[in-house]
Image (cartoon, rainbow, N blue to C red; front, side, top):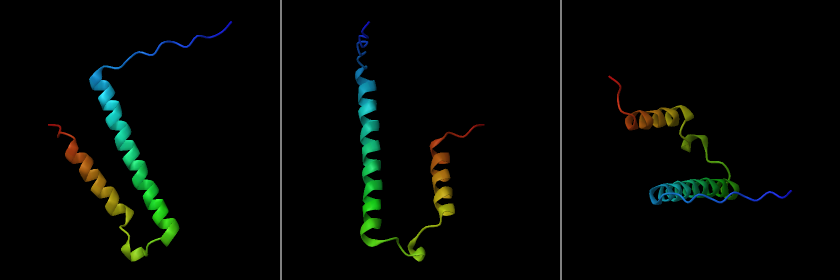
Length: 73
């Protein structure tokens, strides 16, 4: 008994565009990450004095997330 794959359902144009936009953002994020890793491989780790503490990065990210979300009364 052979399995026949189900036919794919086409996406609505808006949904297809949203998926393409997500793929582009994901690809860009992966390219930036790969670039950072290549820089570390070529030049070593940066000096501690040049780095931003993770607590500052976390707080900045949380502030960005809070700004995106509407306030609850």
